[in-house]
Length: 215
Length: 88
Image 1 (tube, one colour):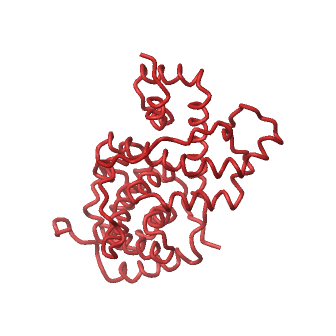
Image 2 (cartoon, one colour):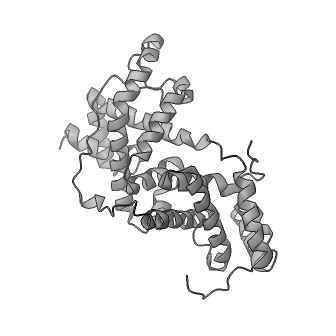
Image 3 (cartoon, helix red, strand yellow):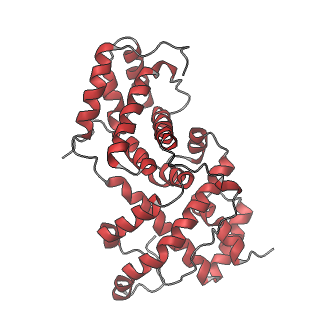
């Protein structure tokens, strides 16, 4: 079992106070400061480096860096966004060092971002969410995306950062966030729909939901 | 101008995020109301976003926190955060 995070959503004010106390010498408060974000940082790192042990190293290095650079946190971004940015940089740095990234200028490429036009997979029975094979399919499909698209899907659709926060964090324009997100989602749709529809079809027929979407 | 399917596909992601201009959104909705294929693409894309988000609930590796805080502790005991103005 992992230790549950002891803190729920914390107000920005109390976070600022915590940061001030650390900078004033109560260093041990840094443990408290980062606890609520551990999962988020780990997921972000894992989405990029795709290896559990390495993702853990990335988070550790990023957290240490965040501590050392704490005085430079301005408070104009959310602390969580700042932490994620540091984690992303660590993860990218590792990928570059290992030569695992072909520097992609994806946004200039003309890939095929047309969706799969299949009309018989419209609803996911809720029970499907618990099915291991579906989770595995989703994880594989995300992992197979080019780095740029993995990043954008993780920040927007997993961590649910706003478009503006995502743009600021990646240092790209809001328009480019939208373009990348669209392409990433279309790539996932195209890849996943033909498989998911085979996995979920029997359930649909049984339920007789017809054209109803559960969303 | 009526949108064709391809135009609508280009707007699917922004439609889901509700970031389309109201006029474009209205056009997309008009198309979706009559096009089985595009409305299926919309539904399936939404479903996939839900499934991707569902990945959030996984657990951290065993003792992840323990190792992180142990490593952090070594630094916290011996170092102050760097003062402002040091090179990044």
